Structures are given as C-alpha cells and as structure tokens.
Amino acid sequence: MLEAKVTPHWPKESLIETDLQHSCEHRQFHSLINRHVRSPPADPTQASGSAPPPEEGAAEGAAAPSKKGAKKAEAKAKKEAEKAKRAAERAAAEAQAKAAAGGGEDLAKDNYGNIQPSTKVDAERVNLKKLGEEHLGKTIKLRAWIQNSRMQGAKMAFVELREERNWAIQGVMSVNPEGKPVSKQMVKWAGNLNLESFVLVEATVQKPLEPVKSCRVSNYELHLTKCYLIATGPEVLGMTLNAANKAISSFDDEDPAQDATTEGVKDLSLTEAAGAPSATLVTHLNNPVMHKRAPVQQAIADIRMTVRKLFAQYLEERDFVQFEAPCLIGAASEGGANVFQLPYFDTSACLAQSPQFYKQFEIAGGRKRVFCIGPVFRAENSNTPRHMTEFTGLDMEMEIEDSYTEVRDMIEGCLLYIFRGLKEKHADDIALIRAIYPSEEFLLPEAGKEVRLTFAEGQKLLREEGPEEFRNVSDDEDMSTPQEKALGALVRKKYNTDFYVLDKFPEGARPFYTIEDPENPKVTNAYDFMMRGQEILSGGQRIHIPELLEARLRKKGIDPASPGIKEYVDVFRSAGVPPHGGGGIGLDRVVAWYLNLPSVHLACFYPRTPKRLLP
Ligand code: ATP
Image (cartoon, rainbow, N blue to C red; front, side):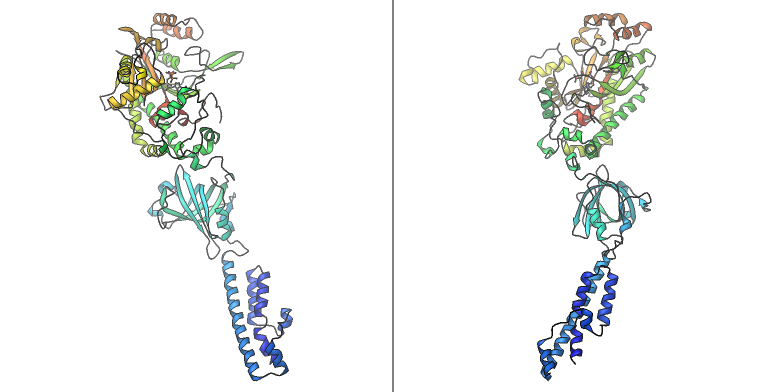
C-alpha cells in the first residue's frame, strides 16, 4: 500500500528535471522521457538516488493508516501525478522547439558563412533594376553589399542589400521552425555582418507588407534562404555611405585665404537646404572607396563621361577627326610660367599645359577639323573651387573659310548639344544630385536667340547695371572672377540664359598666337564661353602667317627664337597653313557648373590640387 501510494508521485518530475538539465541531445532527452514516464523503475528511491521525505500523513498511516488518511494520500498522489504529466508535456514541447531551432546541431550550416570554392547557388541571377511582378514567389540569386542590417529579436534579421548605385532592397531572414533552410545561428550571423560587406544571397521574391521606404526597390523584398560572405567590410567604416551621400560640409582642403574659395562656394548656391553636411572634402578624398560608392558621386561620374561622348559625337558628325596630343613635351607650350618640369634623362621635360600647338600641327598637317580629349597640367598654386593642377581638356581646332565666327558657332552648337543631351539622358541623375546639391535649372537660350556679347558690351552692362564696385570697369582689361559672376547674373536676368559667349577680348588679355581683329587691333577674334557666370572655354582664331606671329611674339616680349616657340613658328614656315581657330573646354568645369556643384574637385575622378596628389 505504501509502495503503491508513493510510486505515482515519486520522482518523475524531479528525475526529468535533472535529466533535462544535463542532457544536450534531444534524442537522449526523448529516451529519458520515455524511460521514466512510460516505465518507471521498480524501485524509484534507487533510481532517483534520493527518496522524497516521508509525508506526514503517510508516516502516520504507516503507523496506523486511517481510512481518511489513506484517501487524502491517494488524492495527493493523483495530484502529483497530474503535475508530473504536465511537466513532462511541457518539457517535451520545449525540446521540440529547441530541435526546431537547430538544437545543438545547426541544420542550416551549409546555407551561410564564408564563401568556399565549392559554394554554388543555382538560382536565376536577377538585377534589382529588372525585378518585377514576374519574379514574385521565385527564387533568385544576388551579389550585393550589406547597406544596413538589424536583428529583430533572436529569430529575424533585416538586411538591406545594395547591388549598385542606390539600387537596394530589403532582405528578411527568419528562422524556420524546422531549423532549415534558416536557423537561429544563421540569422544571428547575418544580422551581425559588417556594413559594406559583399555577399552572395539566394532568396525568394515577396511583396512586403507595406512599401519599404528606405530602399529604392520598395515594392518587393527578398526572403533570404542562403547568404555567403564574399568579402567582409571593416568593423568601423572610415566614412559611412550616408555621410558619403550628403553634401560636403567643408572644402578646407583648399586655402580659405584665397578669395575665390569661399566666394565660389557661396555663389554656387550650396544652401542650407542641402541638408546637414556630414563629411569634409578631406574625409571624402581620404576614403575614396566610400566616396565613390555614394550614388551622388556615381551620378556625377556618369554625367562626366556623357559630356565626353557628346562632345566627340557632335564633332564627328561634322567631319572632325580625333587625334592624340603628347603630355610630355620639351618646352612650355603656353609660356614659361605654370609649367611642371621633370627630369628627363640628362635633360628636363615639361607636362603639357594644353594641346594648343599640337592641334595646330594637325591642321598644318592637312587635317581640316580635329579634336582631342586628354589631361592638361597647370603648375598654378591656385587653391580655388575652379582650379586643379591636372584637368581634362576637350579641345578642337578647324579650318576657317570666311570668318572666325564659324569656329565660335561650331563650339556653341557643340555645347548646346551637350547640355540638351544631358537633360535628356540624365534626368534621374540630375534629380538625384539636386537633392544633395540644390541648383536651379541650367537655363539655355532659345534656338536662334543665343547670347553673344562682345567683351566691351559685357563691361558696359556691368558698368550700367552691375554692382557699384564695377562702375568703372575698363574695356581694355581682363575681367576678374567677381566681375564674371556679376555679369553672369545680369545676363541670366536680362536674357534668361546661364550659357553665353563673351567675344572680342582685348588684345592684352589673350596669348601671342591669337589673331587681332583686322578692323580694331585693340581687340582679338577670341572668345570665352560662360556657364553660370564662370569661364569654361577659351578660344579664338590663331595667327597662321609666320611673320605676323613673330611680330606678335615680339610685341608680347617673347623671343621668337626661344626653345619650343621657334619650332612652333617654323611650322608655319614649312608649308602654307590655312586660317584656323578653335577652343579648349575644361571638362571638369562644364560638369561642375552644369550641376552647380560647389567645386570642380567633385566633378573629377581623382582631383589633383597643390595640396593633393593622393589617392
Ligand atoms: P582661369 O583664368 O580660370 O584660370 P585660364 O584662362 O587659364 O582659366 P585656359 O588656359 O583658357 O584657362 O583654359 C581653357 C579652359 O580650361 C578654361 O576655360 C577652363 O575651363 C579650363 N581650365 C583652365 N585652367 C584650369 C584649372 N587649373 N583647373 C581646371 N580647369 C581649368
């Protein structure tokens, strides 16, 4: 009787708990449950190792079991048995859940981790740009950067995956009840990947509950089933993508003492609305990878390459041929100043300040229309938003039949073609850039109403309608940068254009090879082209008669027999050269001023300035 009373409530519960605490493998656990729940040992006190203390009633009963006492003990035993049963059920459920999450064994271990040579994901490769309704429910693969990641509890991770530029999508990884294809360990691993790591994922395309605002691909999300790390990002990024994609906060890389620095930034209307600036130019340039990953920089880079293409396209359609000018030359092409000299075996060489002479050599050599695109070097200690020590020149030269205006109008047509092409081909990029560097629409003149002012007309406008400080500007002296900007503002107001030509520059403001106006030798047949009040091109008709060239050289105080110059003059002696003219456009400035960027350094892939030669 005593045995019968004690057995049911004996040790099931305590033994199960003990076994649970010490068992790892759920299979062992199940066998324990089975063993102890289903067939308790004959002698429980032996099995448990510690018999429960005798109960009051039982002890009494042992001495003199009353009917009432026996009933009470029976009821208690029943209750205990119920309790033990419930505990066993609870333990079994817990064990099942643990098994589902992988338990000790990670059932998803092959679906994540560092990529191995043997790793293969067979799903269809789909670019985020092309993701559509037809992919819903399908499994795809994607290679992308981790743009953002966060754990949502222990069973779910949200991972933003960026494929290129700002093409990002939300990825969701959640633990499967069966422990695969996604386990708890896998979610934890993915949720802790460093930002900007590069991964290969397999995922099913699904509709999110609501559009994902933080990602460009907002109407779909990826439910990740595999994730392999191809290359890890650092623990801490030198500059985050968010910072890289904001307006640059300071251009202190440049010398603020130079007037044009701050002036340029102010006038280029980088307003407060640009948002909280978060990294300086120095930080950007010192973190070239993140600088380049910023969608804004990629949009600028693409626009830059389109300008090059459109320049070539327009000219080639008009029978221009391309040629290549050397960068290494024996003597300064534009005079002695501002030239980089470098050792050249037992002598010295210069880096070309422009392809000017070579364009003319091509014309002298029988090419009627030529252009070239290449680097130009200026050893100027100009720390301004407009200057670099190396920039890209878009240069052209052509024969003139009747008037130098043939050249001027050709370049004007070319630039208008470029501006219209940019608007048409890069509307999205321009909008993206504007969201960071605000700008007003770049105004173009109506066809047939192009604005060409003579230098004298420009000065007159400044004297009459410009700021007080320009009341006395002279027709014989070159314009300063503030003058140019003030004139740009006046032209915009008066003619509704940000692009215009300033023609007939004073003789003193142009180089020795520029031809004088035969009707007024105080001015030249030379022009500058302006964008938003800043120069982007200089050009004009060149002297093609050697005697005239020599005379002009002497007038400018240059010895026609000096090295480099003599060879240049000899070209016009060696054969009759037709009248010709051309121009040189600064690519960096065209891009920067079209987009109203605060500095040309942002429009260039690897800016070179007096203070920067790296990376
Ligand atoms: P600036 O007076 O602005 O220094 P520049 O008169 O010396 O220019 P040019 O020699 O006529 O310029 O060169 C033709 C074009 O090349 C310029 O209109 C400009 O677009 C570009 N350019 C000249 N110098 C630089 C420079 N240091 N950095 C970037 N672009 C330049």
